[in-house]
Length: 65
Image (cartoon, rainbow, N blue to C red; front, top):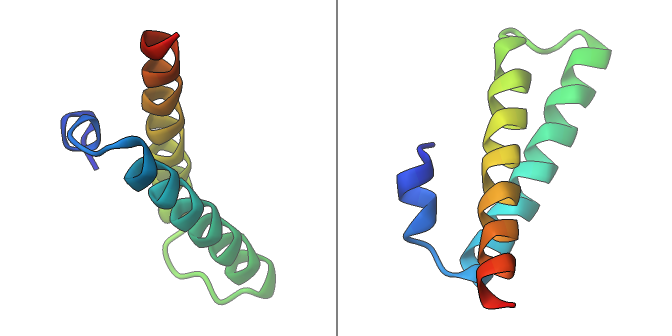
């Protein structure tokens, strides 16, 4: 997911996206622990997407203050 796409979303949509990514990261870690994860690079990709969302949320908070 690109930052440009995320910047087009509003705060509520970003918060929802953050929750979805957190849940996905949990599921990927669980799959890795049980040996069911085929592509371990998905964990890194999900972490980076989550960081992008959190960064954009924080920048919106700073701009609003």
